[in-house]
Length: 140
Image (tube, rainbow, N blue to C red; front, side):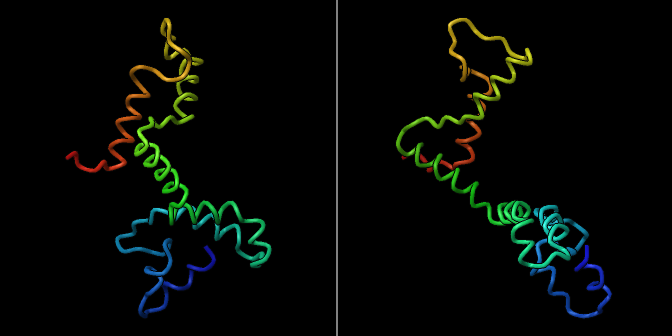
């Protein structure tokens, strides 16, 4: 990585580990978003700021999503709003997962069951996982 090669030779106060998520950490543990930051730095190195804004936009967005998790929080907000309204949250990924399992022959279609959600299995597991993640307020 071009920026980080020389900075460890200097015997002075190392402030980079607090400023850069991907800088060298104590005990050599990589940070959570280190891979995304490294991809962005490798993409934007040597091409200039203006070209990097256009050409490395995908890497930058991935790095910012990993750092701030804005899209994930928006999705969880929608789940909470639907839960508060009393609606069951239905995710399109569950239907797609069930459809793939049936296509691969891992799961048989039950008689009288509509394509999509199962009575047990993936759907019930997903509901339990989502309810745990949402940290429901205590019942009164």
